[in-house]
Length: 172
Ligand code: GNR
Ligand code: NI
Image 1: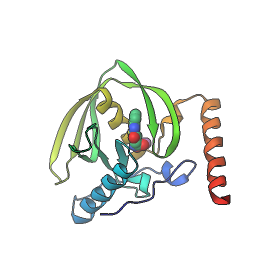
Image 2: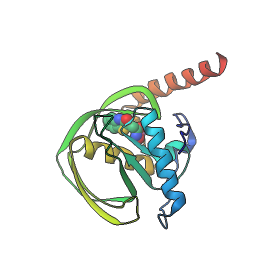
Image 3: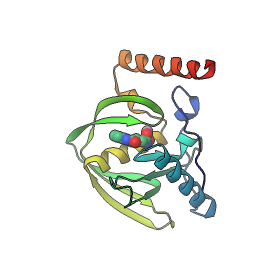
Image 4: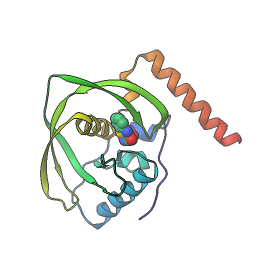
């Protein structure tokens, strides 16, 4: 397993549309292992493959609060089958938008069809933070970031800040 570098906005790679996985084989499983390790190292609760520069429709997640009780989840080629018309609001953050947070509305519940770590067809009904996180990750597969839902002004302020931080990192 290996910890990979997480791409941060602004970065065109994050805007790609990720490609479906044809078969869940050894290389996809290795990618999922690396993604999970990278996510844990960054203290995130979810990660999409594109965040480490790989445009494949793969997501990993772990919402467990207890570090000693890991509950990794893997989603390959996820598709939302149904979503609640009622929204709920969560304060979202993103490892690709470091240190920025905003309240985002999304459907409160959703049903997802996907392949698991072993390539087995699976189905999940999600609500609460799990539903929010799955939708946040599935947005990454379409090149969408949570800041895209903010006003033009708020979004441009965040991108400006991130660009400045990137420059400073090069200088120091
Ligand atoms: O770590 C993360 N926390 C989080 C909090 C609220 C809603 C979504 C998320 S996902 C984020 C990790 C990440 O960037 N995944 O793409
Ligand atoms: Ni994210």
